[in-house]
Length: 192
Image (cartoon, rainbow, N blue to C red):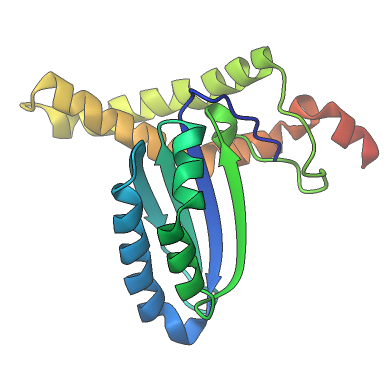
């Protein structure tokens, strides 16, 4: 994915790591350590770790967020980061990374696309966003309202937004971008 970044925009680093199956506990300890180390750096906004569902294929997805690209670069260029990465050398079989700033994180490339493919036009992102978000808000409203009665309104809204964001990130946006790939990425569709 071609994720261009602006210097002042928040940036997300998405790391997919296949862990040695017999080193999962070691990886878990390492992951806690490197995430704590990252949290000490300026601009760190948070980290999410998506653990594997299938232990036969232990793929971890780590999503690291910084407030801007220079702060992320400071973390990645630091000796502390280099030390932690060296410690992981025997734990990880394969690693891939993506840096995204903004909504690009929700868009997946078609399976037969090159990594240099540009993002869809702005209006297509807006249309896709509405197609994804509106039904999810309706679902959240229908499913969650009975459970959120009696909570402060802002807490209820936070829970609803978390629910929608979780489903939006996976599986809705990847499925929707794949389904509408012919429209989002017409040049790739013509190559099939």
